[in-house]
Length: 360
Figure 1 (tube, helix red, strand yellow):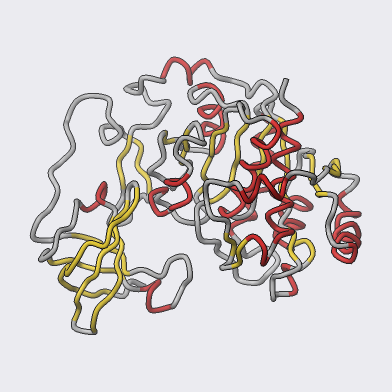
Figure 2 (figure 1 turned 90 degrees about the vertical axis):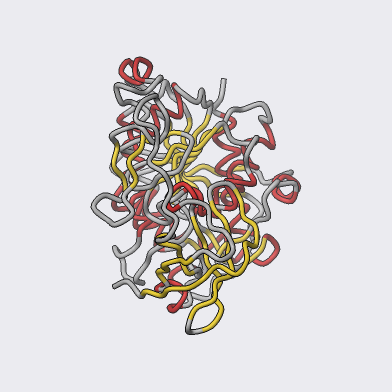
């Protein structure tokens, strides 16, 4: 349930596109808080704020902020009643929660993209890379651009992690490197809003003009440590959607020899479940060459049962380390940087490189 606090903004630390960090004084002491101005308005020192402190109290890594629910004494104005703006649509996300957002869907009648989306039926063979974690996004992008720097890449964000795209500093830092972000399902705050992964993929192709798309959840992975209890299971459904729409599904494998949890060492059970049990369509599952021999043998053994269901693709890794180090975004997964979990990022970059080879 919600853990509530009330406090006063002492200072605005700064922020990034769609979000700002605050120092808030509460009866329990000072807290670090995060506000989304598009939802609650822009906080200023002296404002009274209502906070949800659940993630902070639980000590969650990615969600460890007190979140501003409202500025009760200075509410933002209603959005304009007319005009095709992001706030003038009828698409409701985070539905029936106190902060449900009403947005303009890319395929709504009022959307400037309505005609394009109404006519869109296929991805035209576009390569689409799927990944379990948001942290794979910049690594996949680095792999694509290592060989095809001119390729136009779009990000299709699912709702398994953070719902607001504004939570992601990665997306803010990738401005100019991505054609745009399409937020799908219950997620919101992208350059375009779509109700499903299917329409999100079509928007990436036909509105953003993507040569390649990347599908992954927002920051923050939900998992219970059980076979089916993790948000990344939706990867398998994304593979199915890509195939139904005439795209080329490519699976980025979650490979690691640095994760302290047995279920995520070698190939994570997240990848094995999503690709091995949920995905009904055939995909290219990419393994980078150049892994540590022990890890490579472990990966090969774990993937063997998936060989009849998918195409196992070995990809050269020469040049990918340099591409990863040149990323405009600092690479980090579960608190581990590039050199601390090199295999994880290398596997993601290899999936991106494979996607690049499929471009005309």
